[in-house]
Image (cartoon, rainbow, N blue to C red; front, side):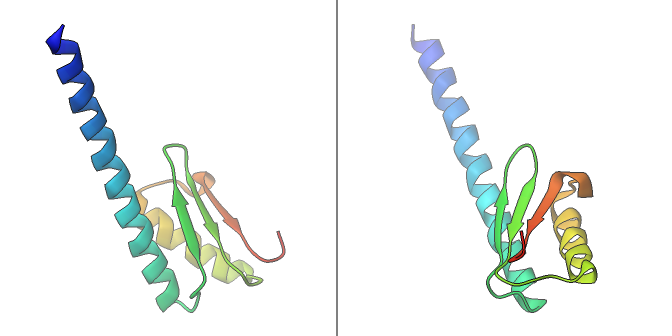
Length: 88
């Protein structure tokens, strides 16, 4: 049946657009974090939350700033944002 394959194609295109949009946000966040003095930050977004990895040891203030930046760009609550620093 041609309808189901058309629906599958549309669903796949929707997923692809979502992945590309998420990738853009990740790169934008990495740029913002680089501007905040974290040139090595890696951001991974998923439907369930965000993980930010940095290759340094963060102070509580720096971690809070990262959380606020990610929350502001994504709309995610701080509880869904995980920050992994060199100590973790």
